[in-house]
Length: 161
Image (tube, rainbow, N blue to C red; front, side, top):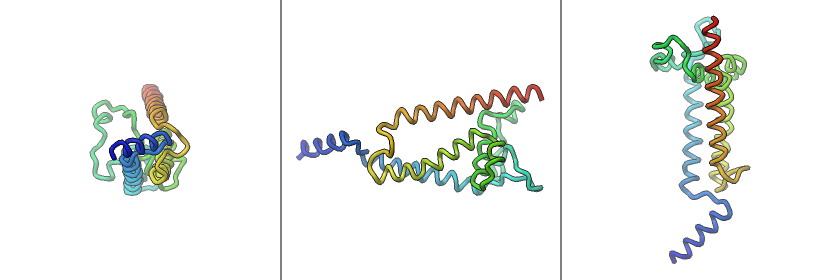
């Protein structure tokens, strides 16, 4: 009996089927990302005069100001990310890009990941890819480099301002 279950598990792995726990995690990731987008709809990314904020919109949720900015008077590496998400969910792409273009790209990727995670979970295997580890490493590395690169440019612009 145990050897039969082991051979069934081995066949599933050979055919690329994800274990039940992986499928559950994919559903949880999709739900978490959906929650992020819901929270973005609660953020107020516009000033009273109707113009778009470029950062600090997280404060409209009652969150404190950014400690990095408060202590250094410089933008933090993810400065404008929340504002970017909040503007994008309202369809304001140009102001989203102005707030933080890396955040806009991350929001688009996250919007794509919600259905991808659900479809992959229900199929029992990853959609369009065989192994997720390399893709995740590439995406995390790419967004980290882009975010830090953007931050470097922002710091240079701040110095010459």
